Image 1 (spheres, rainbow, N blue to C red):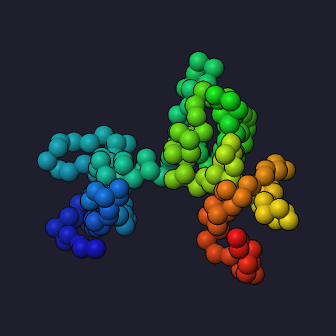
Image 2 (spheres, helix red, strand yellow):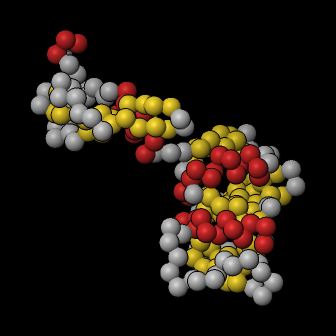
Length: 182
């Protein structure tokens, strides 16, 4: 991390941090703003309520409010991936179970998986993805499979093929020695 002391805007110090995202280097703005950013003096007068927002601040704001667009029933809905509980394959469609309602989408579960894995989703069956934030319990079966319980009472079978993915549900495991032994 390096600091550019010449990047001062009306008493507000800005820090730039070099971050690597998808093998590309970008300058990411990290600021400790003590007052709202105003437009630079060389751009002319600013309305009293108008605040100039640098493009990097706008980029960070968009990252904080992640939404995905889904097309259903002739409409395009913008939903927060954190509100999706599960995605279940149903033939050529997927059933997206949202906290408020469900949506049937004509999409393969593999395509949905690629888009949702960065948002904390885990594949537990060839036809089921779950949001790790909604998982509350795992029950091992003698067959080597598991039953996964989600908030709201949903029960899903975890097959042996996807059992290794269960380790992605928690950052650390306490008192589970041998729990995932093959």
